[in-house]
Length: 442
Image 1 (cartoon, rainbow, N blue to C red):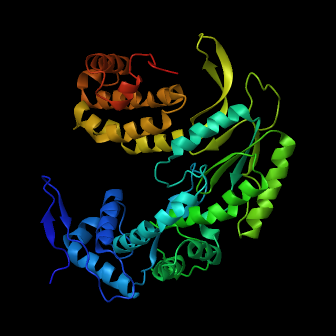
Image 2: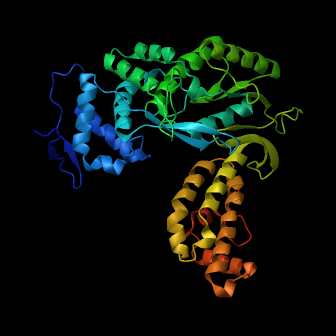
Image 3: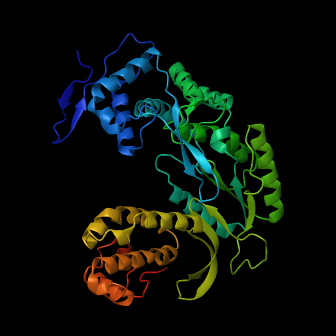
């Protein structure tokens, strides 16, 4: 008898699976939760794991594959396969790489099932200034709150935890999970996922006795739960008057004086050492929030948080008067990463495409940048995105003989297109048009 029995929801184009029946399995897991978990994994997309099975391939036999996952999870016989180790450049384009763990599609579904059962019991206890991977909270929320607190507090501790995802102690993670659930199967599978080996490109397996790989569906929740006890609650008890923003392992702490900042930094370093973590001695910095009202001279007056660089910037008040404020804007590292992405498109070589084709191909990516990096101090992003017009000019030089080696004429031609169709490209809609002006800055 098939597991999934479809019935109409009465809504065109939508259907649902039948509800679960009680089984004689050791662990009672709702089949509909497994189905919903797959829908979330499918929506998140993602690459194949060690079995090289894509989401599309998994979906061809979704009924059978999901039944296997449910059956094994419910019986206690689910054992996660190795996690595919993928090397990606370190954030900011610096030297070296970091390891991203990519589970198989089936394993991502299984992890999402556990997350869906565990998250409702831990989410309500999380600190309000924990923003990472939480429902109803975002990185932009954290940046916005950080901006306001930088105006009120003169000093910031920019914390950098060395190799956080590689260092989290398994025993403390399991202790935290056990504190929030009496479901033995959740603890069982979390333990198995924590110790699942990494598989390199050559097939070699690397055992893990600590850490939780970035890239898995369950890791963000486990990391948040661990940091809730390792940092958030500790800060609340030890320094109730000091505010912070935490996005997973990315943390900013606000202090009233340099002396207080140094004291709190040292206390945090000692606390993290107690739970098996280490502050990076070179990347953890104390920063002065310099502006017109705080003109002091100190070594560091800038820091980066979630892709935004905070620092003294020219602003305009409601009366039109310019002044220096301490504000976030798209960071240099973020601009470098976007620049690499733009160069990888090789726009000048796509002479077989029309402007409409190019807009369809790349507008969604550019709009994503605008939605995130354009939230604060948009003019910084605006000036950066104008370089896209230079790439479009080179495309026009190669596509049209009359514009070959005539960049000024090509720019004038592109400007005329922008005047006729100002919403063709996402960056034109922002105001970065090829007419020599940056409209909408501010």
